Length: 216
Image (cartoon, rainbow, N blue to C red):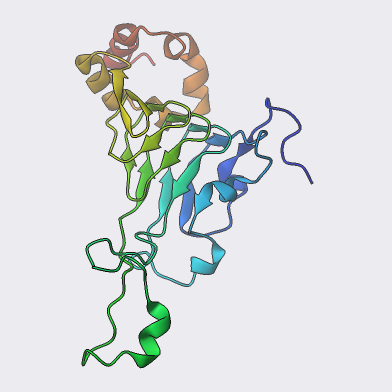
């Protein structure tokens, strides 16, 4: 069954994930028409086979609410995937473990965790971007298409490139602080409907005034 019949189609991510270490918030969607694969194809080195491991044994992918993820985005998971570039040999060499006798303890492993990859709320990730392991992307951030994200991104920043760099902030610092206090993504649908005119504008001050006055 085809998930996407045109580029206009999308799926709600949380309704299509099976692996327990992938967590997605309400209304976050994936538009994957040009790659024709389900969202879990975007997640590398993490699937249902990892469900047996606990949270402190496996890095998780955590996606907030109201995120828009474009076709072909990749989330690189799996920590170091068994490679340790601090060693002389970055190759795992695990196939030699049965003959390993140079240590009194268990043979060392190249794999190490990188930490959870956390995508905030209202984040837009452009087509074919790659998010490296353990990255934290703040609320309201935007990632340009085909970006390679290797550093944490603060709220309401726009990043792009390979490697991705800060292009600009979406709003002034004081406005960003206000938006982070308002946290519209936690509102009920009824409250969102009442305030669509404000949210679908760039007038942060007007929304803040309503928030301060308690009339949202």
